[in-house]
Picture 1 (cartoon, rainbow, N blue to C red):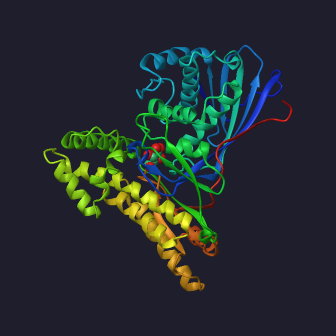
Picture 2 (cartoon, rainbow, N blue to C red):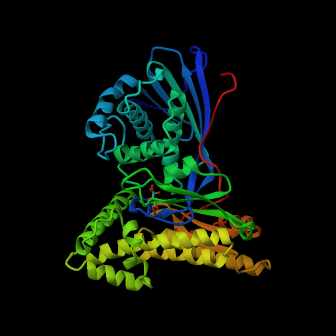
Picture 3 (cartoon, protein in one colour):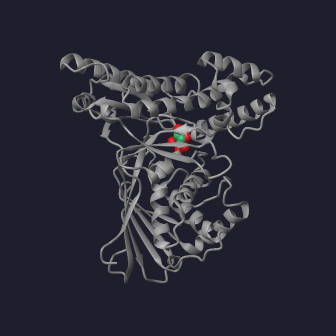
Length: 462
Ligand code: GLA
């Protein structure tokens, strides 16, 4: 496996091109429902208009290699299928569904090439584990040129988009389509095994299955035991027609994001085990526990936290576990009420639940950071400033904000009245904006709308 600096696609005059495929994979933003996907809970993401374009060419030839070019990173990665055979065996030996790390000694940690190699390895392993023949392209040469409009490290799922892009290309090329749920799961396992992030499945499903102008409500209640999760597409009510999705990119991604993410997940697993033991239950997830009448009827967050702490009495880290579990369990009710507010046109209710979600992520789950909190405060103060400058209705001018994605940097999401979006963007392009004053960082504003998921098409000459 080699990584070369620069853009070195296979020249088109190398040999006959057997197939060409053009795909687009969007990023995603999550409106609400954070750190619930791996806890048997609910999420409400939408795909973005920004994403990754890919151009795949399959060349006739005996090289048996994959050449992948990232125009954004100005790098080319190249490897032979024969180099992957041992790693495919390692994956199958440990079990395709396992999350154990696979050693890719030749590729640097966190480098985008790990995702490409991981996708090819897991895709081929998935075919073998289903007793399907290896596709013809294993003997041929594949060239993939990637061009992204989606920023990396911004909490907008650029790595999920990259994995779905590669897996989607390989799946179509092979003519043995694995279903969307399986592809999404493979993409998630690439993160677990080749990048070391033990994420859930929200991002992969959102970039693959989203529909234009819709939010995707996914319930992961069944997920710990099957791939049978429930997807409902929700369209925003007419009352939101004057609002755009506005993403505020903080320009920071803290290095502890990955390790802290994994430690939140372990804390939730520990809390589930302890709660099950103390209550004599066998729930598969915190999301399942949250739906039991015993928990569903607790009136307030403080009461919830107290009750969990009492049940967890005896654990030395009871207060940490109770905080993590309280967030994971109560966030589901917020997703439900946000989805209802969105479809009923209740601006105030959506605003309230988005803010409550941020507060819970800040104080209970503790995955925010000073930059995310400054971003929320800065957007709020600029909207207030703009509403006084131009007579705009202050009520409903801003819905949210809240952090979106895993946290520790990345982006915030809010719905902003259309008439204010451009002025708000311009305001944050000036260096004297309140966010830059507080953090020294220049933010980036992305104005968007819910978009469709992965799309693919063979080039016309095929
Ligand atoms: C990241 C992960 C997702 C999800 C979010 C938090 O985006 O990839 O699986 O857990 O964080 O909601």
